[in-house]
Length: 103
Image 1: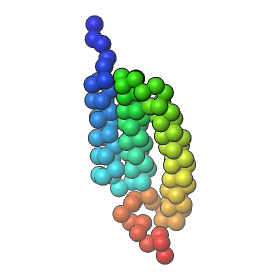
Image 2: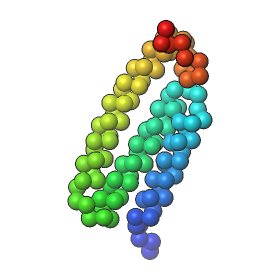
Image 3: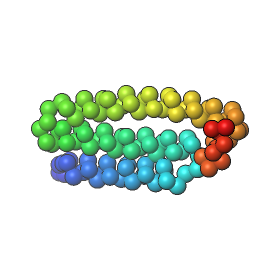
Image 4: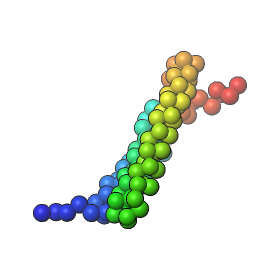
């Protein structure tokens, strides 16, 4: 029987972080970039909870993960409002083509 340890959580977290970075760097669609940011935040949550469990830090990791979840919800709400405004203005959400939004 395989026992799940800290290494397993770190590998999953590294994979999620890598997919998130890939999504942020390579995508031109703003919604896909936001999904990449969410993957990065979830990777951080896994790290906090895993280190709290296996490092005997008490509830500090869970509390930090809760704050990150709250931050991610606020970020998603504000970012989706910005994306909807961009779509209303330009009829697309390609990041490369919205540089004249500041005008």
